[in-house]
Amino acid sequence: MSLKENFLWGGAISANQVEGGWNLDGKGISVADVKRYKPNLDIEDYAGQHQINTKMIEEALETKNTKYYPKRRGIDFYHKYKEDIALFAEMGFKTLRLSIAWTRIFPTGEEKTPNQAGIEFYLNIFKELKKYDIEPIITLSHYEMPLNLVLKYNGWADRRLIDLFIKFAKTCFEYFGDYVKYWLTFNEIDSVSRHPFITAGIVKDRSEKGEYQNDIYNALHHQYLAAALAAKECRKIVDDCKIGSMLTKLTSYPHSCNPKDVELAFKSNFENIVHADIQIFGEYSKLYKKILAEKGIKIKFEKNDEKILKNNTVDFLSFSYYMSRTVSAAEDKEEVAGNTMTGVKNPYLSSTDWGWQIDPIGLKISLLELYDRYEIPLMIVENGMGAKDIIEEDGSIHDDYRIEYLKEHLKEMKKAVEMGVELLGYTSWAPIDLISASTSQMSKRYGFIYVDQDDEGKGTLKRLKKDSFYWYKKVIASNGKILDQ
Ligand code: BG6
Image 1 (cartoon, rainbow, N blue to C red):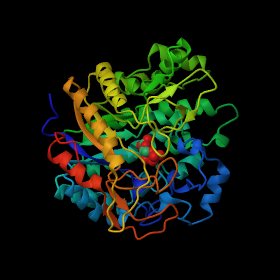
Image 2: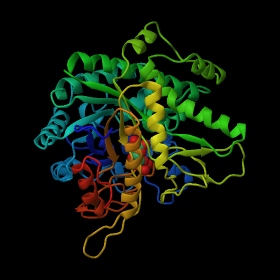
Image 3: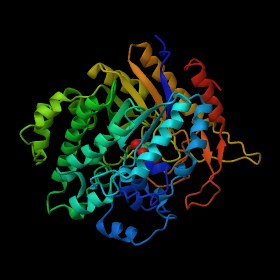
Image 4: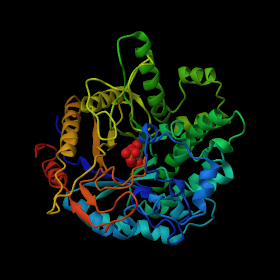
């Protein structure tokens, strides 16, 4: 079995990492706009684990600086989207996954009517995509919620966020539903427990004493409910829509066959996948309820919550996959970074410049595991390698390491499809260099397209095609049959 003719090849980006124009045309301030770039990074930065406190937010609000707040400037997709979409089309993209900045539509999250300039901006993008027959896949919430909702409610810890989100989601379905059929509600919903500020707007010093963990798990509960209610609205408003859940697939391996390591890996995998379980099976499992109770977490279930979750499950499961993770009960193991978490060094794997461990077979394992568990269509909506690129004198960029990374992952992806996994598409992260989510660096580059900008915002923003640009174009043209350069 090979990839279907209508396989959705493309790339994925998020509003806060590309758009810039953070204070233009009525846009409000989002959590991404107060995330500061820090030049000397440590392993916690590489893993995106440093949290933000009220003082840091206040400092950010005092300045209009974009040098140290890089997500305010992005790569100026706000003005350059036509040029960028033309380049995606040149590679033959069938799809583009992007997100809608909540703060462009409802600047504080609380307005009664949407900001028309924000609506226009996205409508123009969808029209441009249509010109090239590129199918949009929309994420409604990708690390860019209104800061006002953080300061006023401590983010998703407060149940009132559900209604505010549904107002935003409905507005998007009503205005964009003619153009958009594929919708994802929350990017990497599981990540609330790893970086509560950026995903759910929870600031530790704003939680009541002793309530921080409860706030995190209740925020998750509120997001499951919001996702379910958004699915319900989407099905009412958008013809032929498909609504999916989006998980960070963090496949964990035990470092040894010591049952303690195996138990840790089980726990870690369970706590990762449980978020997809809730959105696909429509309920908290008995075991998960027990684990939460043992942690002392009290989820504030209201009367209809169970029904809402049960009646509005998703059509497909999308996920990001960058690396696998190795865990050990021993304390003397070398620690390495990973996607929003750390682990220990796996002696069988090499790592990226940022210490994420490269494991293509882990992608196949993940696909098989998820498909066997859920038997619903899957979509890989993020996969890629952050690396430092060098521009040659003639402007060429020889990113063989990126091609190698992607090629090996695609090979394993195809093997999983040959074994029967129903896969709707593959969108690489990211088709164009953008601001890193975890480190806010520009120098952590993922793209097939190079963007001339450094970590402090200096550069012409000129777009250049890397070797991988031509390679990916061939991959798409052959529907994945040709993977060699
Ligand atoms: C994913 C996020 O987890 O990882 C993206 O959805 C992010 O927003 C990507 O950019 C890569 O992580 P980073 O930290 O290298 O940008």
